[in-house]
Image 1 (cartoon, rainbow, N blue to C red):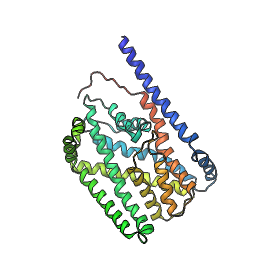
Image 2: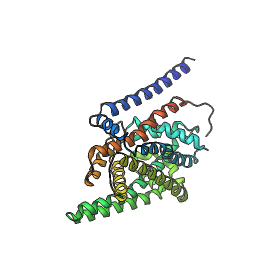
Image 3: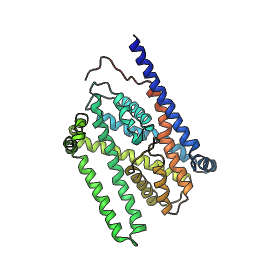
Image 4: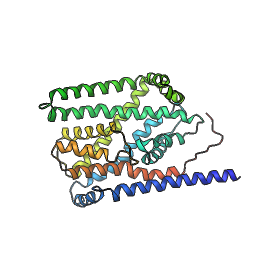
Amino acid sequence: MNIAANRRFLLLSGKLLVVALTLYLLWQAIFTAPDTFLNWQTILHNTLASPYRWLFIVTAILIPLNWGFEAKKWQLLGQKLEPISFLRAYRAVMVGLTLGFITPNRIGDYAGRVLELKSKQRLDAIGAIFIGRFCQLVATVIVGSVGLLYFIVGFFWADYPGVSLSLVFLLTAISAAMLLLLYNAQAMVAVISAVKPLRKLVGYVAIMGRYTSAEISKVLFLSLGRYIVFLLQFILLLILFDVKLSVLQYVCGVAGTFFIKSIVPSVSLLSDLGVRELSAMYLFGLLGQERLQVLSASLSLWLLNIAVPSVLGLYFVLRLRFFRKGVTA
């Protein structure tokens, strides 16, 4: 009885700690970070009077669709372990988002989705989660490479043709290599098993080799769908904050921003906050845009797609059952 009571106490304490840490990090990121909230607040005040203010509502409406694509991906990937409904998959994504918010490189996303499974072999889901994230990375790199080509050709080719050509070959090679790895997941498992320090992880990632090319293609297609929604949200916010460009410049600027953010390791508990802002300000700066307008759009994108859903996900974190009885494999 005492053991059960202690377990419940530890469980409740852990949940409350997640809630407190999430809210604290939100406060730190929005209200104390220099050159973010105060500038954003001023620009937002002016934006409210803009005839395009309805774009903010449209962007917010797209949030459930954005994470709905991710939930559908997890539903398809998780079927290798146990039947998962779309609503359960959506809940798992929300839990993973909240836990990922407070961990570097969003590693908490793995824990959140694993904890939502009922199977005793739920740690095997690590490989499935990796495949989903890798598909999203592949979509980001391929589209982002095309976006960066615009900047390479338009801003660097004339002065640095040799370096520019090398970058083109590098981007093409990276995209091709990632596609080959994605469609040869068994090879990835073999590489992991061949590296002695990683060999103990093979049991957790072996599931990657069980996905067919058709299943991988379906997940990649969903990843592209989510990417398009995310890209559209960013463009709508850029328009809202008076960043005026052509359609091609909008798309290439956002795609390049997402590419840089995806390849720069995150060491902050605030995930990608800061990396995307810096890359966006640099690329759109090349296009002659004001730094604060771009910063405002990027920060708003983070608030809408990461911060707000992370707070909503706290509800599902509090309902987690870390210790299950009578579950079957």
